[in-house]
Image (tube, rainbow, N blue to C red; front, side):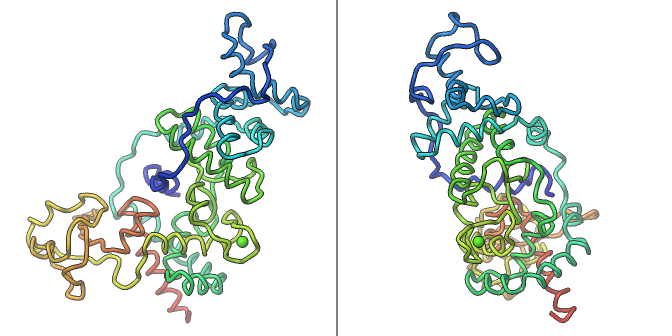
Length: 385
Ligand SMILES: [Ca+2]
């Protein structure tokens, strides 16, 4: 899997600003009637607690009692009794017409994960140099795995390339970098990971609450039990490790069975990765990136200044980058230094390089995907296609 700082799920979701806000006023108790304080966990101390707060705290519990749900409770869960979760459930019922009983069942099953908190709050590791990063992904095993995946799913890959105009080697390389072709799909239940990050990790609470909402909407749309899916600690799912909002926006039912299933259906996963690239503007006309030499060190002042293509190739040539002739002056570009064990190499990221960084906002990631895709393509051709 990717290093924590480059987690695809975490870094991929920033695009979606059309998500409903979550800071909503209370809309009455979940059962629509007064709640009576009870003894036991979560019941507080009767008269010392204002009635409004009591209702907020006991809403889901009392509601479930009224539904006779307590008898089937396997254990206390942290979430469904918490007032902020009660508020959140209210908001989902009102704003998205999600079924209250279905939500209560989901949050009764959701379990806080200390492991998720540990992973997301891990101090930033030393940034990997390019040669270290490359060594993780450009291995014989991952290249051979890509050839095998391509051969096993050639029809779906060909169809995706025809429909979305995204090359098979890019689709295969993305799935290879994200999950080693489906071998590592994550071990955290998504409902646990997202509930933990939404309600027990304040620094990213707004983002993950939004993803939790997207996940619940997704589960309803796809007829999936929200307690089932597993994924990364940040809630990324399936072969291409889509977070919930990406899943809802970009996944496709590519085998036509009426469901978008990138959890287990490789054809849907292939089509969905291709659609993600198509929707983010993949062109496929020119090289995504080219290696350049530095003729004048002045050009290094504009290197590594972010992923945006802030210059034209002509400007970079004028500053001292020695760019292969086939690259036109008017192409947009960004210059990156890629650290080697001994020295550096320099790369121009061009339009499609930028598109790869929409999948995961890292130049190292984009170059690794490109080089893995080329290595898989060459090995497949060497093996006779
Ligand atoms: Ca399908």
